[in-house]
Image (cartoon, rainbow, N blue to C red; front, side, top):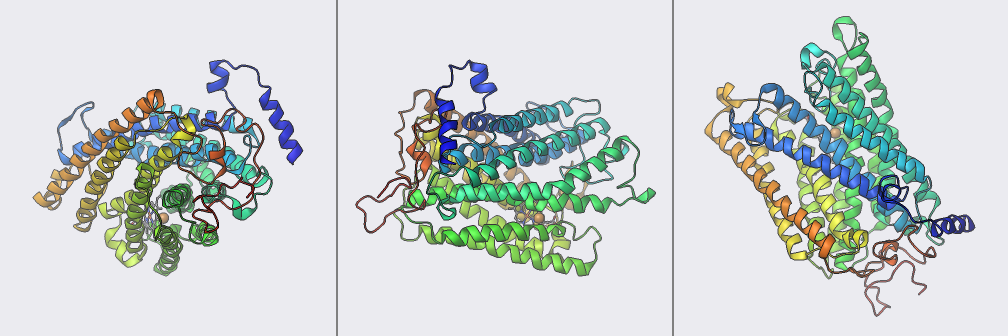
Length: 566
Ligand code: HEM
Ligand SMILES: [Cu+2]
């Protein structure tokens, strides 16, 4: 293995000068592929955020001309909420959290010069890019983009006369299918690389938690997506070939889709959660100079959560007409799965306890992740109880719940990781004052958006309503004020993202040069140059210990790099 790596490495060292196209567009370097995934994901994120702005304006001020869009029609509204959800989960959280961070961190944190299959890696990104293009094209086909909600429930998704977006639905399903192919290819690389290319001396329990989390998430994705790919093909057949897999009038069953979708969909939430949990672990140990409290517990808990996540899916279907005895079983499994998640959060709090904490930008994001994700998890317990869910299902309470899980993951987790590894990725330091300002102007408005929505949900406010003024009981002043407050908070939050863009660009161009290891961290990526060259290290590192040896009593320095012989 060692000699094989060395040879492979030699090949890298003698690489000829590359043109812009071969270096940045057709590269097989895992770091460049990270940037491709990250920037594509962020561009898609801007579309998703723009859609949210448009439909929230319609909710707060029904019938106004939304600047940048115009009058929102009911058809626009359905298309916007559908594609907002799909984009944020499939085209933002997946590419950024799993694919971008996975690509950057796995080889660098395990001491490898690249992924095991660099060309498959490149193909994975190219298919992902194609899927993004196909999705954007779907907005412009006759009839407009798909408008049957991101969960694609038939018969709405299967019959053009219901969704009114026949072509849009087909192109949408194609885009989702391509996206799945991209991540299947990515997942193969992540798991094999982490298992086979580790630096000499790196035992299983020396692997940084974030790498484990991405590996477990990849396995979850690959194991859960099969049934949904089958479902997507059946849906395409129903749409285009006149089959009736999901058509109750002709002996089909629309609930079958819900099973196939959520059998994938619930594990999917852990697919994106686990990388964010891993990123948080790296930041809080480094920034509190503490050993991760209970490494093995976190690892085993994550594996256990992954297994259990295959047994909870029908909690999305409590009111879909499933047998109440089944609902009891899924209530129990759902309540059980909250335990390991809570345990991970407690481990993090225990890690912080007594630490010497630096409250810089990455640390603020990491702490923000723990605090807000806890609210998301706790509200999931209410929803998981089938009795309570009969009332809460499809209200804004559900919406607030999943934004309290998903926002910490996709947005807070990304900013945490990006501000933490920026010095390594780009060789420059970001401005910490601007970073902290951006944190507060994102974090506070985020809470101001979604806390009110828990209350409107409890007051009976339903999701997916185009114009509340059509329902007298839903257009009370209290409800309308809370809705407008949420929308105005969103405007504040979106504007604050300009601070990040400004900080990102100016730091990249003119920021102070980053040292090799600015946070005095233990893991291997910090032993490479900032930014690491093609091939990462002139000679690959050797590992002597675990990743979290901070403040070791026998050492003068408060950290102990994994590659330091003693
Ligand atoms: C402690 C963990 C969690 C529990 C117990 C839990 C429970 C639930 C339940 C029971 C529902 C269905 C509510 C309904 O539709 O009536 C739900 C919805 C949802 N949850 Fe969670 N959840 C948890 C974590 C997460 C995480 C980590 C994510 C995302 C990353 C997430 C994303 C969602 C989404 C997207 C929906 C709504 C889907 C839709 O109808 O559009 N949840 N959750
Ligand atoms: Cu679920």
